[in-house]
Length: 307
Ligand code: BDR
Ligand code: CA
Image (tube, rainbow, N blue to C red; front, side, top):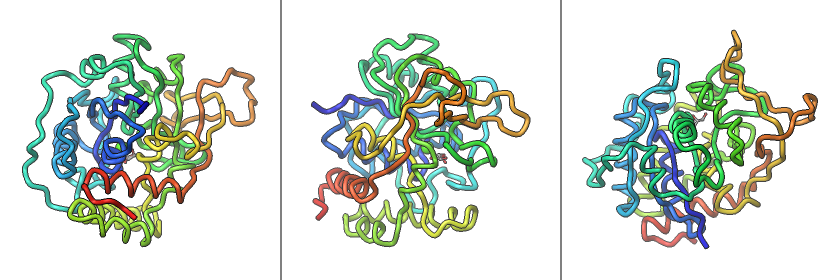
């Protein structure tokens, strides 16, 4: 049976591919897409979710907008990485896919029980937990954090940095949490070979390739990467087939008070603290099988079968 999933996201180049992977892989029953401010403002990321669903022909999945700002801090967007629209690169026509009247948290609630895959700041997820508890959530699988260094400060990864208080609520909730951090998403590199496999998937594949070409440019200029890492689909892949993303149990603490370390994920891989693990932490990606699955899913939603 496919796993029922709510995808809570902030599209975002890699979120866009995560949406297509979740919609196009037969192992997932995508019940809802909810948006949260992060990569760009809430209105922009919500428009982008509708744009992605329109170009991909995803017309049967409700979309709802959620929180416009983090729980207690001002919003920090990532326009340096994703551009002024949040999805710079290709040009999009007006979306034909609509928007639910519900708040993201209420849409989530209406489609439970489900696994939440979170690929943005954890504001909506924390609000759900505060309002309804763990009720109906099978698991929370998130892209965020790192066992190593950060990407927005030396210590913090962007999704956790934007709303560390929300992350703390999620990690201390008692709900099974899986963290797919930079240490593993940096293995999901969009190489020229991957780009070539996208380009042959018709118009949708070419749009994906244009998105990845913009993403490659920012990753080259900002971070010196030869190829950009496609973070968010790694969390979706973990739900599709856990053997794609190897995890270990560990205690993860979120730094909310640090002077220089706000938003750091303190991952106790060696058990120094003697605390019960509160998360499964991703440590290794099966790269070839991951790309096969991503390419096949985009082929499925585009109606063109990938070889
Ligand atoms: C995360 O931050 C965003 O820029 C990406 O969409 C991804 O979710 C990577 O740190
Ligand atoms: Ca994201």
